[in-house]
Image (cartoon, rainbow, N blue to C red; front, side, top):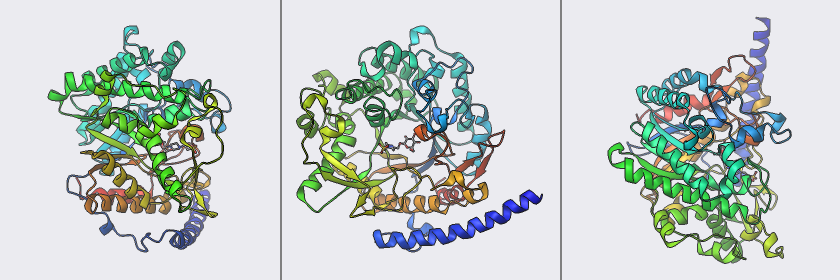
Length: 515
Ligand code: GBH
C-alpha cells in the first residue's frame, strides 16, 4: 500500500513535469512550425462519414509463440537471436504474447470502439518452410481462422498484410530469399493463394507487402534488418525490390483471377515515405527532393501504377544494376493495386549531393540517389524529436506527401496504413506517467488534422487511416525500448498486462462519429 502511494505521488510529480515539458515543446514548436495550431480541437478532424479509422500491428512484433504449434522459423527469429543485432539482445520469442491473448486483445479493441484492424499473417506459421509442397500447418491456419472470426464477430473489419518482413528462413537458406526472383516469387504466390482461399471470405483488404523499401535497403543493402546480407550491396537492393514487385504482381493476379469477384475485397501494397523539404533554396535541392521521393516511393509505385521504374532511376543507377521488366511483367504490374497504402511518420530535409561518387560497381543505393538528408537545417530540427532517432514530428508533411501521391498517380483510394509516434523516454517512466502520453495524443491530432485537410480541402482520395500501433511491441532493432502503442504493455508483469494510454482514449473519441 505504502509502495502504491509512493508510486502515485511520484506519478503526480511526473504529470506536473510532463505538463511543464509539453508547454515548452509547444512553445518551441511554434517558433519552427508556424502552421501548428495553438489549440487542438476535435473540430479540426473532419472526415467523410464512411472514412475508416483503425489500428495496426504486425505478426512478429506482437505474436510471440515463435516455436509453438508447428510454426517454422523466419528470418527475424534467426536474426534476433544473433547477439548484438537487437537492443539488449531482445527477441520476438514472446513479444506481447498476442498468440495466446487474441481474445483479450479483441475485447480491448472493442472497448476502444475500434472498427478496423490491420494485422499481418506469419508466413512460416501457416507454411513452415515457406514452400507449399512441404506441407501446410493446419494449427497455424486454425489460429488465424479463429482470430479473424473473433474480429468479425466483434464488428471489426480486417485488413491483412501478407508480408511484414518475416520471410520463412528456409527460403533464405535455400534461395537467398528476395535476391531470387523465380522460386521465391512462386513460393509467395502459393502462400498468397492459400491465404485468399482460407480467409478471403472474411478479409476485405489485402496488403501484399509492407514497406518493401525497408526489406531491400535495410535487409539486403545494409545490416539494419533481417536477413542482413551485405554481400554485393551494390546490386542486392535492386534485386530484392524486383522480386518483391514481381511477387506482388503475381499475387494480385491470383486474387483477381480466382477470388476477387466472389469475395468482393480489395488488394494493394503498402509503401513508406517521408516528405522532403529542400535543404537550401536552390533548384538543385528542389530537384533532389523530387528524386528522393522517386527513389523511395516511386521505385515501387511507378511499377504498380505505370508498369516500370521511374526514368530517373534508369538514368542514375548506372552499370546495368537496375533490373529490367519484360513486356509481360510490365503488363502484369501496371494497375496492380486497388488502393495504395502509405506508412508515414516524419519529414526531413534533402539536398543535392555534388561530391564525387565511388566507382559504379561500388555504389550503394544511397550513392545512386545522389542526395544528402538531414532532420536539421541551420542547426534547427524540423520538429520535436520522438524516441526513435529517425522520427521528428512535423505534421504538415503528411498533407504534402498525400498530395504528391494524388498528383503523380491519381489513385482511387489511398489508405494511411501506419502513422504514429514513440514518446521520448517512455520506457524509462513509471507506468502512470507513460499512460499520460500527451506527446502522442498531440501527434495523432496534428497529423489527423493535416489528413483532414488533404481529404476535405485538397481532394486527395484518402479512405482509411490506421494508427501504428494498437499496443507497444517488438520495435525491430530497437527491441522493446521504443514504444509506439496507444496501449501500454507492461513487460515486467508476468501476464504482460495491457494498460490504456490517454492517446487511446482520445482516439476512441475521434473515431466515435465514424462507426
Ligand atoms: C514502420 O516502418 C514499420 O512498418 C513498423 O513495423 C514499425 O514498427 C514502425 O514503422 C515504427 O518504426 O535507421 O535512419 O535508416 C517505418 C518506416 C523506415 C522507419 C526506415 C525507420 C529507418 C531510418 N521506417 N527507417 S534509418
